[in-house]
Length: 192
Ligand code: 5GP
Image (tube, rainbow, N blue to C red; front, side, top):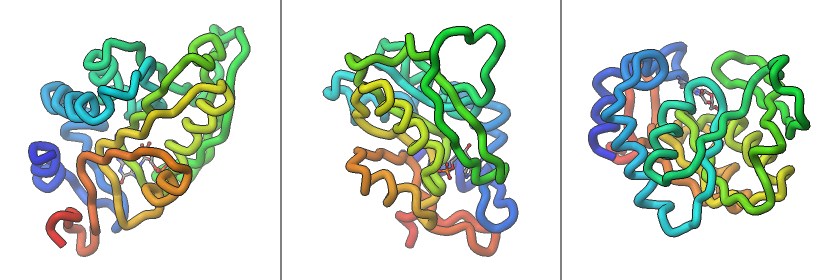
């Protein structure tokens, strides 16, 4: 996706050699028009899969996911990183290790929002080692639902996430793929 690739190259800031900060348009300030285009690409790719629900994880996955939910005309469900006192019903739960925060979160979704009838599209802002996406896939499997694919805004292709998801048989679409962040410079897969 050209507009996204351009944004990543122009506004992404490399931190500690392997983390990309995209606070200008995705992780802090959000470029809503760009997210609408992101959602349109996800819709175009997965539109014939009978998607009934978008599943993501709070907080950074929510922006692209809510736009995708609008495009597919389905609900957007986000996994919560802490069990709030208001969540009194049964939950599906799993542990997800955060690459950037170096911490493991216990994440939950209410069982009433995922069922065996669901065809779930998982969406996240970044794909690095695949922990977040595989954790969400675990929740889908616990519910007996089907995962029709994983839509990623920015994939760091030099990490193992994409291969791990494909090894699970998941249909992964990444709209911007980064080959390297070496020398504090973003090099896209297409540029190699
Ligand atoms: P994974 O679970 O695939 O290892 O990492 C993906 C998750 O970690 C995403 O949900 C994202 O929030 C965060 N993440 C991983 N790498 C980066 C990065 O380079 N930049 C940002 N902003 N977030 C990242």
